[in-house]
Length: 475
Ligand SMILES: [Fe+2]
Ligand SMILES: [Fe+2]
Ligand SMILES: [Fe+2]
View: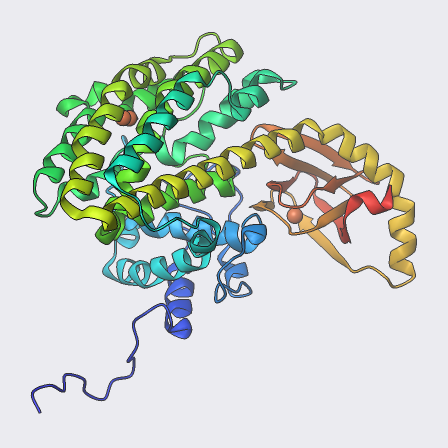
């Protein structure tokens, strides 16, 4: 019976179909003081990532999310956990003193094992929709890919603005919006090329050397000062931001994390090499103009901004885009034919879809922050009606009583909510660097899917949360 490998085992199935196993791995991973709630609005622990672990057991990742569900809290939580899990592959060390206990815990064998069970499972939950969303004709060839991609190059070169840049320039406080955008770029840029460098290993012919050329550029040819992530750290510093990864963890939006997670997905599992090549062609090509547009918008909002990161990309990505086509896309299709061609186009389209999703999340968040005052006025207007509806038994509410210093870690809701402060003082966090003070008998409407939190400033604060569904039906 040499063919029988399996003995009686407790776990037979290590695939993502084993929901119980994957769920246990996720819950086990999340259980750590490094990930649980605390009172700091910015991350104080170098290895800390607040995951709101007490909520995770109530979330259901078993059925893949539909595109319409990607902005829901379950997807947001999945993106936070998945990003944190991916970090087991990347070495992070603080510039100052290191907490060796936290360091050992963050990279413990147990956390790595849990992460490697949890990651494909969360990816299945988050990214399966792409299979239905992006339907390709199955006959891509060298000629059609070339034509499609050169059209994209022409289109990309003509680009003169972006929704994110518009949101910054037109904001009431452009400098805050600009800093918020830098924060949204941070999950990717502060470890720039780390996902890509996963492809530095292996034995896969000339493609590996071509990709390595791009990796070397990203790493500044071994010069720390020129490394792209170092340039971005300088940008952050010049904007008055702390460049430590991931200091502003609690302000990373769902979309920003999802985009980083997508690139992790197509680099961690190396069978995605061709999708990655499609995605990298998109990124390198799109970046040439995007970086110029962002630079100009950011600079107009923060005149003293160090924009070398953006200048560098306007210039070097002209080379990278050409290299991505001539030394990655073309030879892949020449050697591996239609399989490679289809995967390349798929990776290109998937990355484009998710980039747009991420950018739109930022635009919506800025819009929500711009409406901060309006949302307190809307609260005033509908509060009597909401109260009456509650008394009539047609609404649910949660009563809270929290002590000074208590922080509700940033999160989002799937429907609109009304927050009413009965007594005490709360700093309602509308998002990155924007707060509204709410005292006795103040309140605010919390728009669904928008990142927010709260910090208590009085000895005690009593407040009530009403789930009101769609706010427009109350106005
Ligand atoms: Fe770069
Ligand atoms: Fe590049
Ligand atoms: Fe909330």
